[in-house]
Structure formats: structure tokens, C-alpha cells
Length: 68
Image (cartoon, one colour):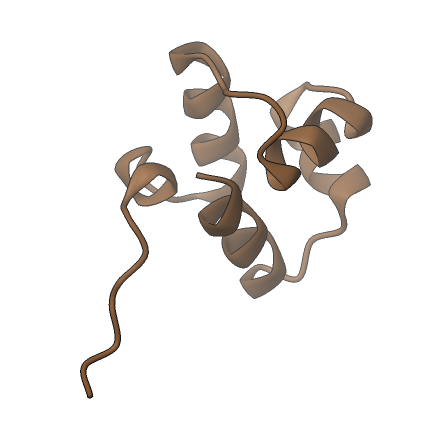
């Protein structure tokens, strides 16, 4: 989830502070989620997805493997 969260936030052009505000979580908590130090509850996952305007599953999809 950490990589997807960071990637989606960057694609939307949001700073951590902005996303944290929109999702109603602290910036430090968001930072820890992006580092993979914490796991998000379903409630937090829903808040983050809503703030990013994506479906929650997009945050938890495994990274796609590049074909050789």
C-alpha cells in the first residue's frame, strides 16, 4: 500500500500536508503509512481513497510486474 499511496498522491500533485488534511489524518501518520511503517485500517483506507478520488482497491493493489 505504501508505494501506491505515495504514487497516487504524487500523480494528483498533492503534498503530504494537503492529503493529510483532506483525509483527516495527521501528516506524520500519513508519512509513516507511505514509508510502510504503519498499516492503515479500513476506515483510514476509505478516507485516503476518497481524498485521492480513487477506489480503495487502488491503494492495495500489488505492484504490477514489468514484463521483459
